[in-house]
Length: 351
Image 1 (tube, rainbow, N blue to C red):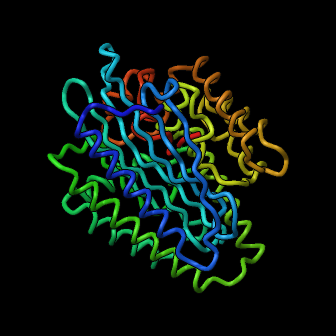
Image 2: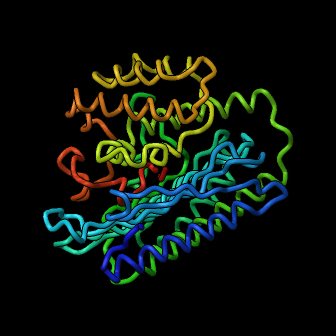
């Protein structure tokens, strides 16, 4: 049986996160082909320390991949652990049509046993084929959702989602507010509700006017999905932290990866990688089939590769993405229960 934290604040945060997951599912199911989302659950230590559930798109033509994850872990019975509890919504949506942009959304509450708790808010728009109007709508929603925190969130987001080896960013609009402390949940609630509705509107309008994808559009989407996978597996601090903490949620933590990438394009970036990350990329490419398909077997292989790489090269963690600050749960090279527990992986996940 999955247990929950004794903290009333943590319980309230988890209720908020569950409500946002429901809202996002409802907006994604708008349309002629809602397909099917099925729940997949996991438990931390057989449920003694919580667990999570992801809603995964398993059928239909609307999405390439979509994973809506909620998690709640706690250590009420482990006084030596500095982390009290962590509750998170971490979701990624990759539409099937190349003209429709992807969304990454993360909202989490982390509560320390000493020093209180904080929120982490993230949202970024990831189009295969950028559209200025979509970008403007998303940025306007970020302003409405975050108010006085807009500039700080965008500055941290631009830093976190940069890809130095490629001289570009993942996505076109990025927001990342780390260690946000507030008395209540008004801002996190508004942030989630506004960004979910803004993305739902963009997706609805894009799909309503989209024509069948051309081969050129499909190629552009595969190239961008390759950039996305590259950033997640070589730079994303949350993804790596989750994998290094435990192996109870591997498929969920890598739930953000798109279904197919360009293997040759991915391999071509190895010379631009700093050492020893060039070795990491070489191993990741070797784990992919010639088709570039990313299934469960490939995800599990990626997990093994990442763990082995950082066991050999622990200082390579310093090369990963970060905002302006590192929260206490991910300092010290991420060897403490951390971002997977407050972020469900890298995004982003449960399995």
